[in-house]
Image (cartoon, rainbow, N blue to C red; front, side, top):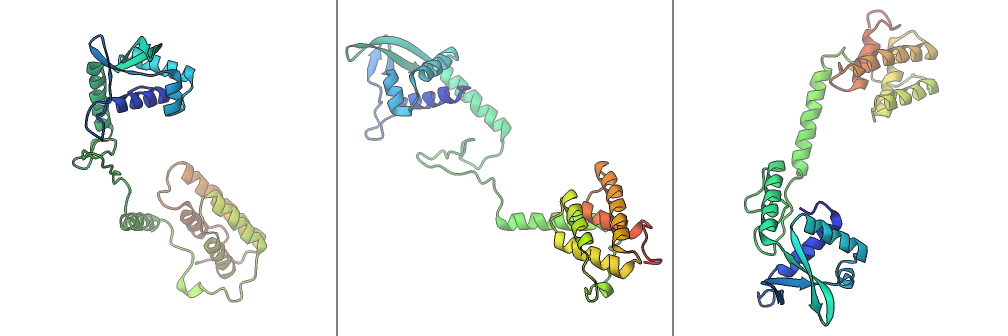
Length: 258
């Protein structure tokens, strides 16, 4: 409503003084002049109540007055000229209603009995809107997404690894392939570095006649092909899964018939 943080803070404090006292339900307003009730506040009062310095308080009051939300006047208070403030009820309520309506348009669905800002209509009760998802809901959604991704990836070339070739026995270490796979995983934003490294080593040793340098060159070519399709938006699932499909399918030096 205020359009400014400090002005909004002052306005909320002014509204507080308009609310009935919790002790007896009576109005906190005591100053009555020229047909209206006012609150009398000095610059020191704003500092004591809200830790707002004099110039900022003056600016904030000017903003509220320009918007027509408050009216100010100077009257004597405790023997000294003091700025008095009152809410212009008609304009304030009009702005309040408009703001609530705009909030409802932005977030139209709220639990019954709650205001758009999350405050319950019950006096003194504050409810946090249930916008978050439970662990069960999040898990179900994640599972659904993973399933869709697997279905999407099933349309890619089949995985280069069969259950018959899942043993690492006899596969030599290859620092060059390990470093290359780490870079590829980072490039495609895939966190499964260990799994990708295992797949690369098995594929290189079990299904190709290539040496390390030649196999790394195969992966670099597959990277370029995958990156091109990825940039065009043609990869709906995991880029890394597509990458392995390219390595398997692309006649890039693999053994015949594999």
